[in-house]
Length: 421
Image (cartoon, rainbow, N blue to C red; front, side, top):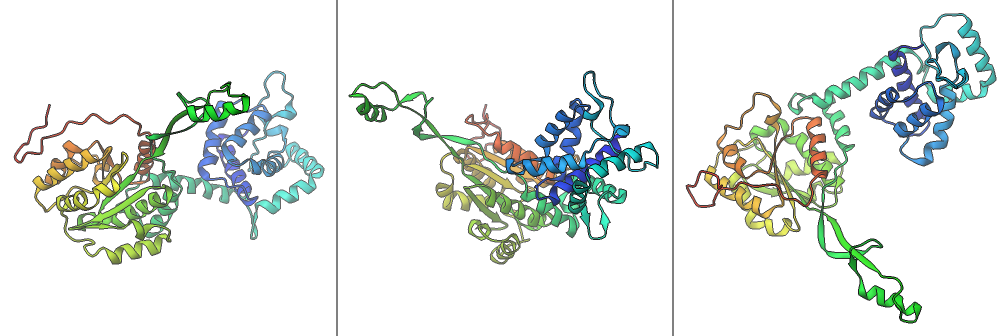
């Protein structure tokens, strides 16, 4: 019986074989498959095949190719199978091939299987071959294991500590995140067979087909529409370690969602929505760096939010918009201005989320004047320092529903410092 390490190595190589056959299978899917095997009867080949299909195939057009590769790769090998349950013949068991096996009876049985499927083996070798080395080599499998481990480490690594190579890998992983914002209830209604509202016009039109007798009642339901997302990112000097990767994050959101408005600020606010849209990421970053003249300069969060409230809020904060502010909270301006402007911004938005890259540190405390002024008006205070925090943010955005968060706000009168009850 094969060890768990042997099975993991074979599963990884199986995923590589699927990729070379044209099936889009990721390393994460392969590891999901490895974990799924713990919850099935591995002695049954049918269950094993279905688990592999569920985890590794995302499009039904790939099922035929998958079945061929599966039959060729997981060939029966009685010497290295799990014990079959009662009523299941040994031939139906799943092989876990040991890569360090010596010569003997198992080798003779393998030779017999290879003679029966010589053509199939050649097809498998064509899929798995790379240059002069076969993918069944142990060093290759170990490198895949290490690459998966490296991806896991990269998820938890702070953006400020990434090398250039890791930044490129992070960009690719960031592009794979699925960004969906919770929907809102529109005032309009759409036709639906199970809607709660009766559609009298459609009902009367249909009744003309039955001599004016409304035998079928047409119905409507409230239409759901995606919310507007507004991102306001700090690109001042204190955020210099995170600015570029966070702009890549905004670029990923901008091109992954339908309605996104993007702004950056240092000492003044600049709209960058059009600069990030429908362009390659390198070109977009270059244009933003060229257009934003206060990049890596000072920070005036209050004045920047004031500009946003006066010039942009009515244009972009419509229909229950969600606002993301990305900043470490270091502010050289008047904290009272920040307090008043973020209070107005919260009242204008459906949900106000502050993303702070420093929050990822266990020793961080929001002691700066800017953060202390802003926090009473923030609905969600979240970190944004690594890929794992972005995944948590994506999950949080998709869970936003029609229920506003409970808000404890301070009055806008100057000098008031205690929250309203």
